[in-house]
Length: 293
Image (cartoon, rainbow, N blue to C red; front, top):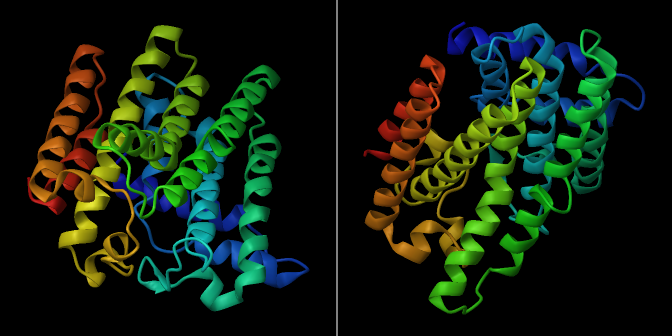
């Protein structure tokens, strides 16, 4: 299956999974951000991981879509005035600009709980043990030790004068959890659905963590060098907000070097573990092209 085939499949399923019902505004708000045009990297990597390890892609669709809903939840809350205060996301007005802050907060809350319901209601081809294991992964990576932890440290690290060594540790922690955790969730659950052994699960987790960190470095770089038309969001806010990023800590060129090394590490893991995926290779090469390395 090609990238565009995955995207079309995911978009169709996301549209089906979120029905507009009473009270309509909450479901419209949820659906608005979930269906904003995007690359769908997390659900794609869930499905591709499942396929790559010999699993049936259809069995992973509910989980992949749930992870995209969780990702949309993080975007809605991240854009709020009390967080990053962004007006645009993927070239469109952010959720709170369309539906108001109160509904946006509730839409994020709703998606956080709606997503695992998609897994339990629609994963009819999976065993109960597998569903429970997937849900445990979801709650771990979505919760106070996962994405939320990354968001908290992101907020607390703004405009703080830490020593260099401490800043490096904090930066790795916040980007591991704020960004990399969702890639780990996507690929781990895809692998679990495929029925991998523990060694394979460890390998794909290492790949996902490394890729997630590389993805965030690329995002930090693009915030400096890209345009609104390319990114679909307000740029330069990291610097003006005093955020701790790879560019603020290491400067632009060294951040690019770190990104290049991490993407090379992704290829090395693929080679060592005999992970064969044109989709993964295509994603890595597109990141290189966008950043110019």
